Length: 170
Image (cartoon, rainbow, N blue to C red):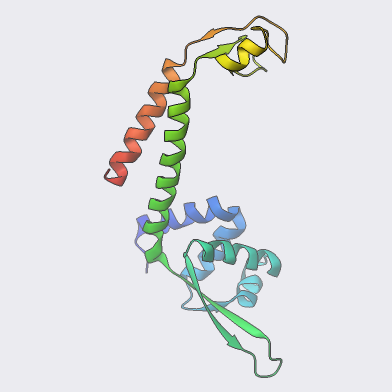
């Protein structure tokens, strides 16, 4: 059986991958050695198509394994699914690495650009190169663009990057 921490983390991951329906599936998988998609659909009340879609999403991340057998009467394949909680840590690490990569790209962008903004709620910040082309006028509202100091954004991104690096042992 899973530890309480693993169990809670597994539920969070399931919710992130497939929302409430995925949580129902994982609850059934946790308490089963091996189970078919049909049985899961019957126990959860989730449509079979949705069950299969969620199972394949979990399978793509190695969180479940599958064994295929052939029905002797119909000749159709039957898929037997099994939870792989030991893969949870690897999944979380790979997701953290992916997020770290995206944060690094964003941090580099923030550090290497000078931004201008009209300070109107519905408008967005514009990099210097684009602001020059717009003659320092907002393309959305027409107000003049003023320099936008992004120090706070850079600090927050740097903090997140550092935190993830520590968690990943980099």
